[in-house]
Length: 199
Image 1 (cartoon, one colour):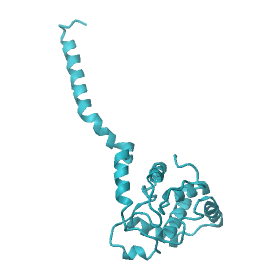
Image 2 (cartoon, rainbow, N blue to C red):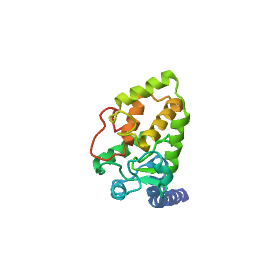
Image 3 (cartoon, rainbow, N blue to C red):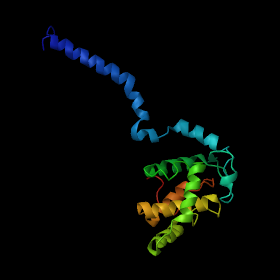
Image 4 (tube, one colour):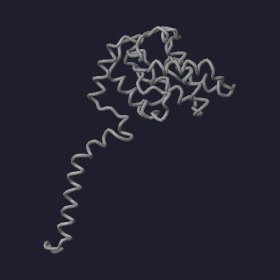
């Protein structure tokens, strides 16, 4: 191409505009689309430090939701949180991000969502075939149920399981995995019965 031709300068101009546009705008694409669900390592550790000291979640029955003065249930209810385990859970829950009833963080759950799941527990009736799916999930889950004890989580996540079985046709392995990933008891335990955390 002749450097004196107008087309040459046009191409150079377009290249410069594209380069400048990319420099200023491409970095911002990291917070849009599917990657907006991802949280970087440092931010996750900051959130962990905040949640590991939070006290709005504790082991109590469903009535706690009528008494809590916060809009979110934050922190663990039994043992201290473990950073490695927390990262595994957050990573594992990403594959279920298309279902907004599944909490994205087991240690940071909106009270409004917990109440909604409790309603599912009361109102959704499983068929005998669906009950078999639920019962098998209980066997597969490492807590042998939605939680380690009959606290608000047990009933709320029982409701979530009913919702997932009736609305999304979840199988026992999927229900067990969700329960294991949602475990908010704290501690360094790894999933034993519900499948891989790295889905």
